[in-house]
Structures are given as C-alpha cells and as structure tokens.
Image (cartoon, rainbow, N blue to C red; front, side):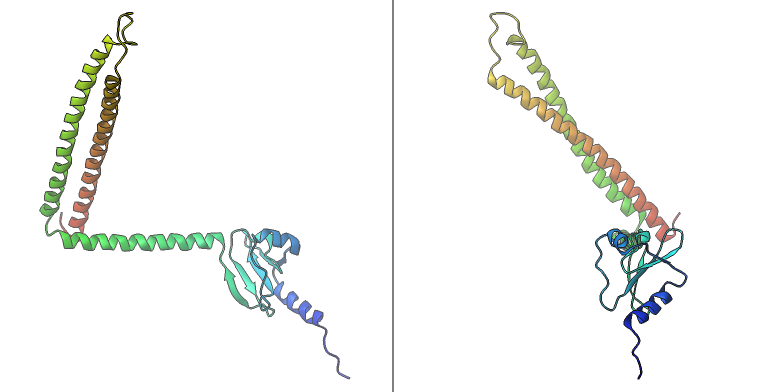
Length: 225
C-alpha cells in the first residue's frame, strides 16, 4: 500500500532549501519582538528573509531581529518572494527622490515663469526698483513715527517727574491714570514701529537677493553675459 508523506517532512525540506546560505533567526519570540508590530505572514507567506548591515542573510517565521532598518523579503512555502516590506532606509531614499523631483519641477516652473514675465534684464531691474522704492517709502514713514514717539516719550518722562512716585516731595500729587496710560501706549507703540522697521529692512534685503538671482538666471537662460 502507498504511504502519504507526512506534512512535517515536506515543511522540513522546504525550510532546508530556504536556509541554504542563510543564518536562521535565533527564536521566533525574539524575532516577533523586533518586528516592530508587523503582522505575521498570511497563509501564502511562510517566512521572512533579510540581510543585516554586514550582508549576512537571516530567515525566520517571524521578522528576524537582525533585519534592522533594511528591506524584508516575504517568502511563500516554495521560497519565492511574494512581496517586500521596505525598510527605513528604502523609505528615506524614496522620500528624498520625491523631494528632489518636486524641487526639479519647481525650478522648471520658475524658469518658465521668468521667461514669460520678462523680455529683458531691464524689465526685471525696473520691477525691482519699483518694489524697493515702495518699501523704502514705508520705512521712511515708520522712521518718522518712531521719531515722533521718541519725542513724546521724552516729554512724558519729563512730565512725570512732578508726580509720585517719581517726585519725593510730600506735596507731589499721585500720577494721574491718563498720564500712566499715555506712557504705556507710547512705549508699546514705539516697540511696534521699531519691529516693523526691522522687518522692512529684512524684506528689502530678501527682495534684492531674489531679484539678483532672477537676473542671473534670466541671463543664463537667454545666454547673456
């Protein structure tokens, strides 16, 4: 009578074929712990295989702890790769490639916009000068506000000397609320305009840098010196 091979003999033969040239993971328990919560293989997925940082191969019924950040091959019972779990390094490479592609497309779009917007270098310089003049006008107005507030602050500082607690005389009246409020508003307004002037100066510098880059790129695209 013909006898049917036992299932364990078949699995043993398959495992032996898979482990040829590879190091078996120490224990299933340790591998599962290192697998980072990844799901166990589906019925058609029998084992995991990966390489460590030195290139040594490891196979296990759970993700071997030696896999680290590398890719993990998921094998079926015959040893065929049915899918690949990308490691952290592969994901980082994909993300970097996507960023590089997006940067390339953005640069191409800027070039198209530059050529469509300007006909000559003089056009770029004219727009630069117009925008800088607007910022410079705003800066002059802000500087005048700052000067006025500083003069007001000086007058208020002199006026409060007549009141307590700035005047030690027993007959000195207390500082009126409206004077105290005026001082606070003046100091706060001075800080606001000073901050606006700093922002304006930074914006002028940024605009000069961007227009200089546009002019250089326009000349490059047009083959100008």
